[in-house]
Structures are given as structure tokens and as C-alpha cells.
Amino acid sequence: MADQYRVRVTEDETEFVCGTHQDLLAAAVAQQVRSIKRGCRGGGCGMCKVQVLDGAYDLGKSSVAILPPAEREQGYVLACKTIPKSDLKIRVTTES
Amino acid sequence: MGIMRLGRVEVRVLDLEKSIDYYSNVIGLQLTARENGRAYFKAWDEEDHHSLIITEADHPGLVHMAFKVRFERELDEYEKALEQYGVRVNRVSKGTRIAEGQAIRFELPTGHLVELYHDIERVGNGLKLNPDPYPENLKGIAPPLLDHLLITGEDVQAATDLLMKVFDFHMSERVVTVDGEQLLAVWLFRTNTPHDIAIIKGPNGKLHHFAFNLGSWNDILRAADCLAKNNVAFDVPPTRHGITRGTTIYFFDPSGNRNEVFSGGYIPHEDFTPVTWTEDQLGRGIFYHMRELNERFTTALT
Ligand code: FES
Ligand SMILES: [Fe+2]
Image (tube, rainbow over all chains, first blue to last red):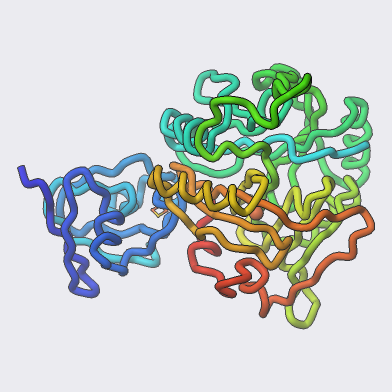
């Protein structure tokens, strides 16, 4: 198993790497990737919401008020609560 | 007489154990009771059994805020006054939560639940006979007191009117549109601090933050060190508010509820003349040094 995965942000064609125990937002911030918005970092505010277009991941405890089940089914996640299980392709989204 | 202070806030958290660890060891509150899905805390200088309740849920945010009144009989008086004002009131019976007597409950025009109570178990602060200035073995930031909260709602004016007319809250500061026509935010007090509750225009029913009191700017700096050491997410690092003149840090609990530590500010009395800010100066009002609001400050709500 890899000890880090590659995360591709579709809109701005950037890429960053994320550890297998690191959340997407922390990894992006550490690598100066600014396209994901940074909010509470606790799964509560929804500012870091992105859509995973491709790849496997674990989503930690996230507020259902800002990430309802229907969105989860479409691959929407909170970057601050998402840990990659493979390389990922994500889309930064303001609407959902 | 009447409301003495903001006595408690109850907030929802996503992960109870993680939150207990954070509020005990990073904020440095004292865990006074636990039950299924809930934990109760007090700050070290408070005498009542608790001032913070955290309740596990699938989304964060405010369950209720409660103001403590001086006398038990005032619950009846305020129940009548609220009903006369056109607000429906419910009774919360003794024993609904640990250590609490009965309370009355109503909803603000902004959709937030408010309780008034007098009866709560007194556990004391242990500093009443030939005391030291503070107890041994404090952990983390260790604020002495809960201070205030800020909520958001559509109709700031209606909530302000209710609090001022029914409970005799006083206004310390307000933000109005440049033409002066509309009230956008308000800071209200019953104590001699610049605010016990503040309300800012935004979505109904949301919590912007709740705040603990600290004694000095030096304590604020030390609190920031503690937050950094514990890898807590900052919203805004130590700075000064134009509004209230207080010094501050905003940061987030493990579920994304915004917390603040607040120190200083002036001492208002009942005859205080409110300070007015126009909307175009709001950045300076909130963050006196940077003079602008960051997007996170205005949009991250729970
Ligand atoms: S930053 Fe608030 S939910 Fe991720
Ligand atoms: Fe505040």
C-alpha cells in the first residue's frame, strides 16, 4: 500500500499529495494549494466541500446539515474530513 | 433583579469523546458530569454546576442558551411578560438535565432557543475562605468564566426589541446601514461587560461563536500558544475588536463550532450611550488592526 496518494484538482489542473492518515485540506494547505477553502477544519461549516470524481476515500464525522446523505452519494465530501484510499480526482465546488 | 448573566450554552458536537478531551484539556474547563451523549462543564471561577453542555449529534450548532435570573419567582414574572409580548413560553421541568432546576423556554424571533432559570446545583469555586487567587492544577487555557455568545438571524431588530423590552438588556454597540435605516448587528448587556449576547444579520438559528473570558492580553497570547501547541484551527489569531475594545482570538472546536477567548473591553453601566458603527466601517469594527472581515468569519457558522 502506498504511503501517500496523488490528488488532482480538475479546475486549476493542480495536483498535491496526501498522506494515508492526512486529510485532504491539511495536505492542500501544507503544499500551498489554495483552491479548497479553509473553514473550521472540523466538518462543521461546509466551506471545504469538494466533489470526488474518481477514487476511494474515507469520510470522517461530518455535519449532515451541510453534507446531507444525498450529496454524499454523489461523491461530495468535506476535504477536512476526507482521507484518501487511492489517488483521487476532485472538483472544487461552490454550489452543490 | 432580573437576568444576571449568560449562565450556560448547550452546543451539539459530532464526536463526544474528542470534544470532551478538547474542552477539558485545551480549553481547560472542569468536567462536572456525564450522561448518555452529553457532558457538562464549568470554568474554574464559576460557582454553578455547569456553564457548558455538549451534546452529541449529527451536526454541530447551538441547542440553547440560558440566562440566569436572580430569583426563582422571576420565572413566573417573565413567563407573563413574554406572553404579553406575544411569545409562547414552555416550562422545562426540574431534572431534564443534570443538576438543573426548572426553567422557562421560548424562541427568539431569530429562531434560537432561550431558557431562563434560577435553580442550579451550586458546586462552588473552592476559593471562599482565605483563598489563593486561583486553584491548583489548571489545564490548557483555563478561562475563569463563560462570557457571551454571538448568534445570527434575519431580523436583528425584532430580537433586539424583545431582549431590551422584556428583559431590560442594554445596548452597548450597534451596526447600521450607511443610511442609518436598518439595524445589522447589536451588542447587548445585562452585566457590566460590553456584551452578554450579540446578534448579527445572517441565517436564522445559527451560532457564530461563544466566548470565554480571560483576564488580560497576556493571557490571550498564552491562549494562542496553547491552541497552536494543540493544533487547533484558528479563525483569527490575537487581535483587537474595534467594537467593545476587547482583545480576542477566534478558533474552532473539533466539530467546527467557533469559540472565542475575549479579554478587556470597557465597563458599561445602565445609562451607557450606545456606540454606532456604519456598515462600511464594519471591518474596522470587528478587527481593528486588519480592518477587513475574512470570508471564513462571515460564512463559517454552525
Ligand atoms: S473546513 Fe469546515 S467543514 Fe471542512
Ligand atoms: Fe465575541
